[in-house]
Image 1 (cartoon, rainbow, N blue to C red):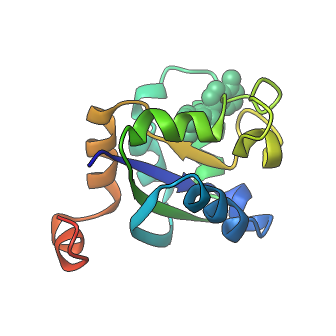
Image 2: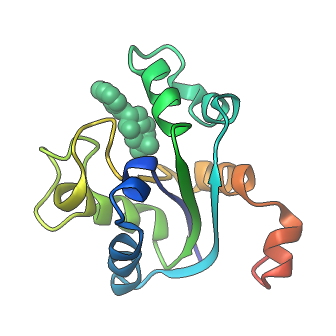
Length: 142
Ligand code: CMP
């Protein structure tokens, strides 16, 4: 079964939306196979978004992503990567389709509530960023 990595971002945590967003995820048929709350250090946030290091928004993004706790989830479903991108909607909530998580809850391109992996290959890398193999094995989802 395909897996993707979701992050409920600091704005989601601050706005008390963790439960609502997880409800959307479960209602859309995703199984949560691993989940943890943590606060990223600026170094960890920089490393996670390394591909964006040349972008004008990179420093602000790192500051935002390390500004509070996040919730990281491993989600499982057939076609998980693509289906989760559809469920969350476009990066800019103003451009996101009606009913998507970002359209419903996000304030801006940066503070957009949730992250989802953009490919199966990146999902594997991002899952390994947040969850050790032994944690996944301990959960019975190695
Ligand atoms: P995410 O899906 O986590 O992937 C990269 C993140 O960079 C994105 O969500 C946004 O939070 C942020 N981002 C992307 N484009 C912009 C932009 N134009 N301005 C500010 N932040 C952005």
